[in-house]
Length: 60
Image (cartoon, rainbow, N blue to C red; front, side):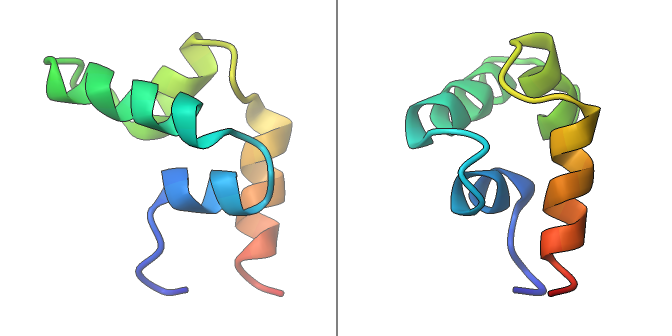
């Protein structure tokens, strides 16, 4: 899991759907230079609590 990207991890823990992950990636490809989490938060897909849940999931 050391090389898991945040979008993959958020899908893995059920915090985002594949469609939502792909939408964030597409926005980045179209020039949005923000980090994945920033875009996902702005779109309302996740929040800080979910980010912490993801971080904690990496250490289990």
